[in-house]
Length: 155
Image 1 (spheres, rainbow, N blue to C red):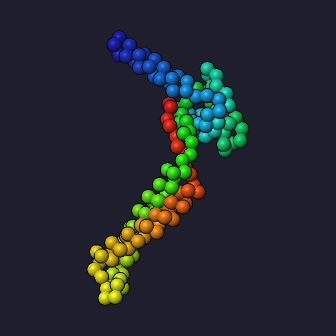
Image 2: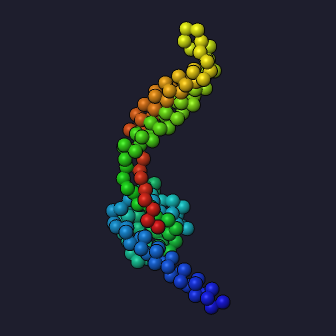
Image 3: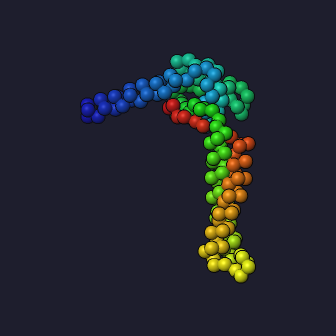
């Protein structure tokens, strides 16, 4: 019984220490995403830090939200936005959607491909490649204008 209590206390102390270390990286001005027992998920900019609370200017509420440190479950810091990553992701999604839709639609109309028709497999391949190229390009353009924010978990 004593070992169980001792291991519980050690675990609780280590958890508290890791909790404190994760939040020690935060600085005023950092862009964060916080999940706590009081606030489901809040995104904003750190306004102030005390030993017991974090104040962050909420993007949604347009005001400072005060979150007790002991209620915080997860903290993520913004790593900025990457246009290149968004372009790559958009191109990937576009190409995948285009390949599937092109393979199905052109494969189903295989007798209309070429002067004397084509096999289902050949027509599906032609449709997949051409549609993946076109929709991949469209996805890349959409990704260039819709950049996603990258997050790193610190707690």
